[in-house]
Image (cartoon, rainbow, N blue to C red; front, top):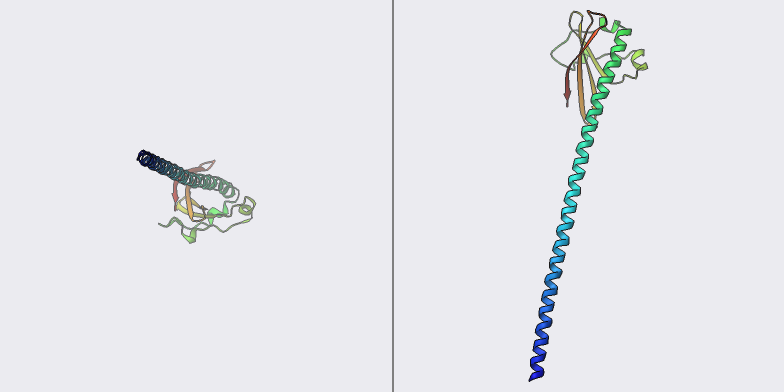
Amino acid sequence: MASKRLLKQVLKQAQSHAVRGFAMLSMTLILVFITISSSLAFAHIQQQRIQRNQLHINYLKAKIIAANKLDLFYIVLYESPELLALSPPCTNLALDTHQLVISNDMMHQYMLSEQLYLCVAEEAVFNIAIEVIYNHTERIVMQRQLITTSMPWTWQPTSLYGF
């Protein structure tokens, strides 16, 4: 009888140790799963932040490129003012194909391969726009106004668009 009681007590202790062990194993696995999930979520958030920053950097690069190319085009216009004499009057369209500038040798020399638009807003006032593509699908259009009544010519920023 005593051996049966002892056996029952030993079995009860073994079962309680097994239940306790299973509970601890389950909690440990749950904690490991939560840790892995939070690490993956954090990595995903970091990746999105990096991509967003890269897109913003590409936008800023395109903006700088557009400004620099417009400055180079100012030099081209100053050295070959016949382009100004050939420019059509401005329309309501910012990127009218009739206003597209046909590349000349000086533009090739300054590596101006972007699409440049030039039109006459009023006498001695010209609107100039450049279109720069970035991120393979987006465009930035920067416009400036050139006033040729004074020496040196006045160069005024007018607008910046992103598409």
